[in-house]
Image (cartoon, rainbow, N blue to C red; front, side, top):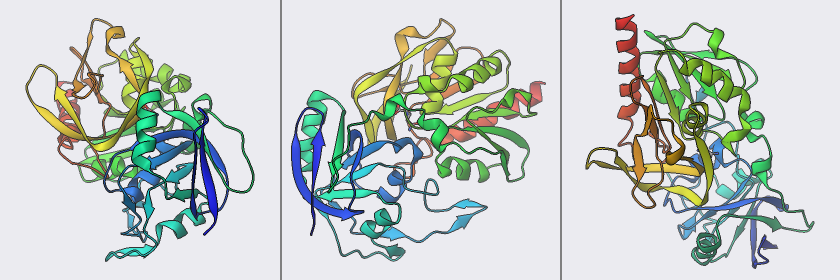
Length: 358
Ligand SMILES: NC(=O)CC[C@H](N)C(=O)O
């Protein structure tokens, strides 16, 4: 076993053992308390630039599934590659066993040249990140690397496609602005009565003929997406339904005239409780975000739709009269609970209502 170390910007150094690629990496160190779902998490483009710490103590024991296609997209993974910058776990299970495993987690990381470190007390590390906030850090193998803040980069431009793609046939024509979409969002639409037009993050979708607009999740600071925010402002001047998830929610907040801010250490897990505003109904949700909309900055015609029951932050917004709404959490899950997938139906109902009224 080769030794590697994890170094945080506050000077913390933790020795561990290498798995995956034996190489160095730098990024923002964030933690997830999800118990399962590493094939989904590692391929979620929203993790671009981040060194992911998993608090669940044993990782890798169910291996990594083989690829299968659904239409022309992955049926299994959330994109076509691993997006994290590095992986930190407590116990890495070298032996894996699962009916659909095709390879080990370590071999999969090697394929994408992503380093992993194990033998780290990830719960102790998480306490540090929780007290001090998410920090820059690096995994150092042989070569030392400089610390690097990925939130200074336009990560969305790096993960968004460069061409328009069309999927499915259906009654409702939905434009999906792909800022780094998880494929389960596409699957959720294609399971419904939808023709999907997937466009790059900076594409001027306002020129397209569509019935409803969807804004995807994506990595980094939402304020980097200036062109998307501008196009969105045009769409907010019309009445066609708009639905945004995660980064998409933050972009809606910014386009509406509100502000976003960086959370101390973010929300990353499959068990985040949210409250539907104005009710006593709560849902358990899947989340992966480091920024949030500042509810206090929303203009008078917007309101908070969901609230995080752990820290009271904004988990979604809606327009008071127009069919525009968003969630900061992931109703498409993958991994995580599917309790809020009904929001895709709500959105398509709003699209049907809009078309009927027209
Ligand atoms: N999953 C996402 O879309 C994350 C949005 C944004 N990059 C954040 O960290 O808050």
